[in-house]
Image (cartoon, rainbow over all chains, first blue to last red; front, side):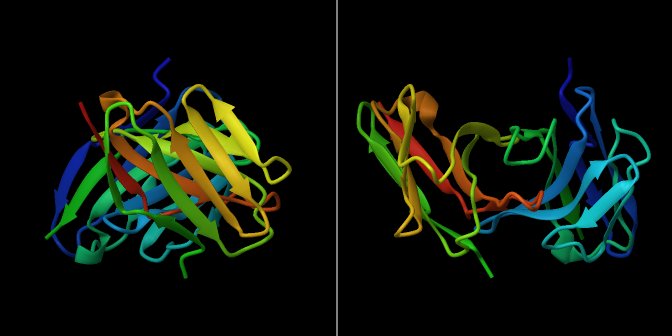
Amino acid sequence: NAGVTQTPKFQVLKTGQSMTLQCAQDMNHEYMSWYRQDPGMGLRLIHYSVGAGITDQGEVPNGYNVSRSTTEDFPLRLLSAAPSQTSVYFCASSLDRVGNQPQHFGDGTRLSIL
Amino acid sequence: QQQVKQSPQSLIVQKGGISIINCAYENTAFDYFPWYQQFPGKGPALLIAIRPDVSEKKEGRFTISFNKSAKQFSLHIMDSQPGDSATYFCAASFDNTDKLIFGTGTRLQVFP
């Protein structure tokens, strides 16, 4: 039972490049979320999904796209990378809503945009 | 606008001492208040959580105290150990959303 798996663990991009951060969970969780963590800012919600085919925006969605074609996978796409998107990105999943079940986090993707 | 304010930013405690981290919130509709613990290089993990219908919740050495009228809640770590050294985040959410709002984090260092 792997839990929440994020790939890659580290990535360096040039400004303007695009990439996809992968997130997969094997716990059959309906709820999945993407956060970014920046020094002094805590974790901020980018996008979330309450089930396959359903996504919604969080606090800081601009510059990011998501889709949820399966229960297991929730990829995050950077359309045109900017230095302001340098951050640590965490994916999380839960069996139910955040108030009813704990969120399980992956170990993060450390992304640098040059 | 930051809806959950956390303090202090960093905390140094001697082994065996009490660590106290405070959070204040603005939105009275929040009804779920978890604390997450994060070790370097790892994702956050749920430590303990409370709802506003109780004033205190204890799990082992970890206690949440909740003051609804003051819109504040705090994490107390009794008999702090070096293994407790981590970053702690408070958070809040309300039932009609699936969004968790995090505080800015407190880096705790426990020295032997």
